[in-house]
Length: 424
Ligand code: AMP
Ligand code: GLY
Image (cartoon, rainbow, N blue to C red; front, side, top):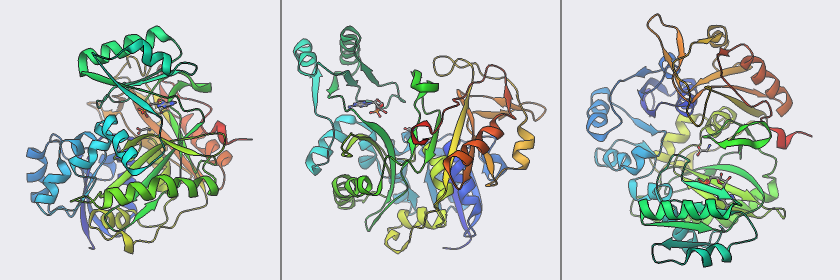
């Protein structure tokens, strides 16, 4: 496929990163985005339609789309890949039955057990369960309670406060019917993105997100305040264990389904003190902001990688990865994540954009819109990130923070310690 028309679904920093990478490809002749944001508008044609099968399918037909790349999980769980398969349009992103790996944590646990993949022990609690006995059984470490719903990062409580754990269990059972209590895994987290189809898998370099709002991992959990790639906690030896114990068994399972998994499997990992990996969660999409630091390091044409996976030709795609390091620092609105203040002007962006598109540093837009006079406005909790790629982490950080310092948003905040675990 040459001169391809590609549609990217989504509106965040991840989708801007996907558009940047696809825009670089000589095989892409037209780039479209639904709904996109002010950043994707600089590279693609944004279409103001809803992310629903009924509006997307006619648009894809009228645009002659050759590849759909689905950013977020919700449309996949709702069956967008199934609709594309029925219409013979290659889709990067799994069908609903497989997207259920992210849609249901219980299903993910059962799949891992069946495949022999290491993860935390757990118990399913419902209205008939003895909650106190279960809390006793998992005492001595913080309690980890997970709702079995797509909760946008708000479905998990990790706490040493027994009453808080108990209250969250009861509230979740009341709304959802049941909840999972799982063993706490000590260690360091890492994210591994694995592109796969029915024929092969390709592991992308591991990265590390920073989930808490403030420096030193303080504050509330967020969607992610910054990331860097590669993450040295995933040494070659740890990488080999991840592939052997997690990626290969999961790929064997997912490739043997009636419709194989065609997309990226995001493996949230905990690496313990012995370098043994455990799965914390699966997502059926690129991570945000992990995507922003992983794609730039790929020397392989990103369209070829995604199209290959969407068409079961991944075995023919060779993955080449840069030796450099990428860093992204997220700028969030005042009040994020609890109650972000939206609508404030962003200044300094034009100078950054003039230097953007894979230079020493560039900007990934997330919650950015345009006002009546074309001015940039912060329209979301996570507003944008500045990303840089350089020979080492320190230089990449310097470049990313230097660009961040040129952008002004009243009340905006960002972490100043992205990548701290990998610095001497
Ligand atoms: P999840 O939505 O499952 O990724 O959980 C959100 C966050 O909670 C993870 O990124 C971890 O920081 C933490 N977490 C989840 N499960 C565990 C666990 N079993 N042990 C320790 N921390 C966990
Ligand atoms: N950065 C974590 C996620 O995308 O879920």
